Length: 145
Image (cartoon, rainbow, N blue to C red; front, side, top):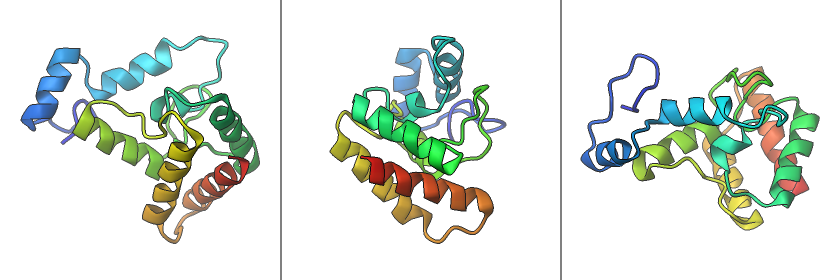
């Protein structure tokens, strides 16, 4: 299970428990910290959850794709609340569980492209309107990269 998410118990995996203990933060605390301690003038678009070291090109592609699709890759609202669990967000949770960080987009346009292509593959055929919008975001993001 994942540390601090809803009603789930804390991590039992020794390596990850040690990483959380060393950092004194679980995923929930990292999420809350990133939302509450970000610059108030900065829009809360979820990019900081999945790509903390992205280039300006990736950031611009994210913003353009969000405007086009009406949703961003983490389904984070302007107030910092998540409206859904997207594939990218789930991938960031997995990475946190395995490695102790959530940066799945990486530092380059190529790494961001690879992560979003992987998210599209995992997603398959969208079944709901939210999933259709999520897929639209990913496709637009790839076009703008």
